[in-house]
Length: 83
Length: 105
Image (cartoon, one colour):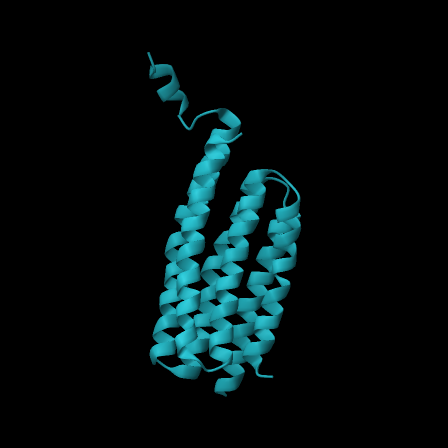
């Protein structure tokens, strides 16, 4: 159990507050929580890739960073119109 | 020595992320919550990327870690602005300044 895997487990705890906000609150507040969860997931994948010594897995974190950005923009765009 | 440096940087990065998540939960309005994505995409990723570089130096893993941290650093302000703009449009009906509204025929 290296320090990287401990860090990944600790980062997983960060998803709990994001989940709480995702289930409560206004649609915009849920979007903010979704964006924060996307950031946390990206860092979890990065830390796991280093923990398992697999440089190829870094691409997962890179793709997730890009796609969670694009997804956030699409949600923001739809939330502008759907009141 | 390197292991200690890696552990300290990881604790810093993970600590900042967990505090930012708590901030998102504790705050009351969407705009207040939005502020907490800033430290989560600046201090956290850079500390974790620094820990990777200390352990792997500038190998494939190190370069990709820098790329991911840099990407988060660059895209998050755009996402924050788009989200705040969407919130503004939802509450005020549009995203125009008062001058523009008065100048409108």
